[in-house]
Image 1: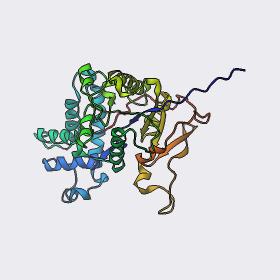
Image 2: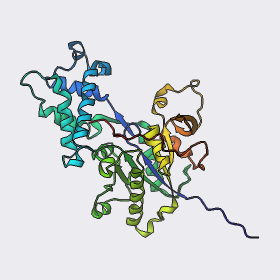
Image 3: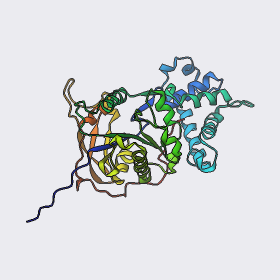
Image 4: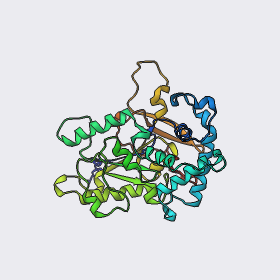
Length: 350
C-alpha cells in the first residue's frame, strides 16, 4: 500500500506590514498640526480662543473647518492628478503642495497667499519622524528581530529559519524616509527600482523592501499590491549570495499585518496571504478585562463584512506575532470579493 507524505510547511517567513497606524502614527493629529502651522504663518483658521492655547490643548473639533477644507482639497487634487501626481507627471511633492494651498485658500484674506514657507514646513514635517511617533512595540520588535537575524543559531521563540521583512502601504514615496528617520535600515528595493539599487541592499537591513501604491499604481485591497510584494521577494532572493541560505519563494509563508479590516486583513486574504489585524485602539487601553489580567497571545474574533462572517486573527502589539503560526483556511472565512469597493484607499496625510 502506498502512502502519500503530506507536504511540509515552509520554514521561512515573508512578514509584511502596513505603515501608517501600524508601525507609526502622527504625533499630533493632522488637522491640528495643519491649523497650528497655518496660524503661526498668519492664516486665521481657528478662533482666537483656540489660537491662544498651547498646541497640546488644541482639539480636533477646534480645527474642523481646516479638516473639512483639507478633505475637499485632497479629493480635488486626486481627481486632477491621480496617485499623488504620478499619473500626470506632477510628482508627490508638488501634489501635496497643491493640497496644502487648497486647504488654506478658504481662510485667506484679500491679496493674501499661502506662504511658501508654510508649504515647505508641512512637507518637511511629514517626511520624517518630526510628524510621527514610532509605536513602542514596533521599536522593540525590530530590535529583537535584528538580534535574531545577527545570531541565527541563538535559541528563540521564533520558529522560522529565515525572515524577510517588507512594508506594503497605500502612500507616496516618503514612507522609506519616514522609516529611516526612526533609525531603521530600509533597503532601496521598490517596484520599478534599478538593479543597481538592489545591489545596495545589505543583510543588515531591517526592512528588505517597500511596496508603495505610488509605485504600483493601485491601492490596497487590490491584490496587485500583494503580488508586487511577491515579486520583490523573488528579486530579493535572486540577488542574495548563494551562501545566504535564504532558499526559494516556495520556502516562505506570507503574513501581512495591518490595522484596517478591509484594506489590510481582507485584502491580504483575498491575495492568498495569511493575515493578522492589529487592534491599535485596544492597544491604547480600550480593551475589556480586569487590570493585570493576562491576555491571550493571539485572539480570534468573529467579524462580519457585508453580512459575511470572518474569523479574524487579532493582536494588540507586534510582540505577539512571535506566537503566530499558519492555520488552514476555514470555511467560516469566505473568500468573497463582494466586500471590495472601488475608490481611493490611500492614506490621507501630508
